[in-house]
Length: 127
Image 1 (cartoon, one colour):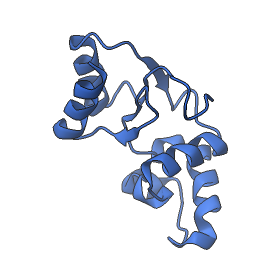
Image 2: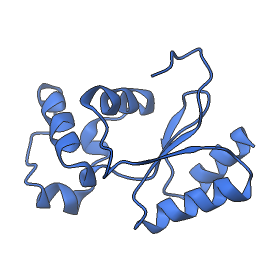
Image 3: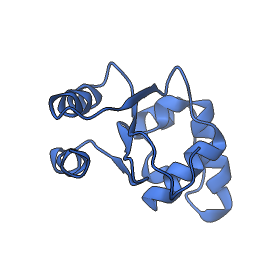
């Protein structure tokens, strides 16, 4: 992964079956923004990658866990610092539990772009 000061390509973690993901890529396309797609169900993040994304968003793993998918995966861990690494490992093992789409902008800013306002902010900054 690039250092924080080096420019990077915009990357979006998507599930092609997700309408929010399709909306996000359509908006990026419409704005002419180049990006790299990561189909994170087929190419799950590593523990280090997910930890890095969470740190950049200043969120905990349970903050980005999809509740139904987390229950289906049998993830029933305490939501506390002592179990953070266990959460990350469990989510990497069951990537459908990770909220989407996750966009990492060229400046390293990372967001979950499920709402129109967050997505518009990415497009505005990248456009």
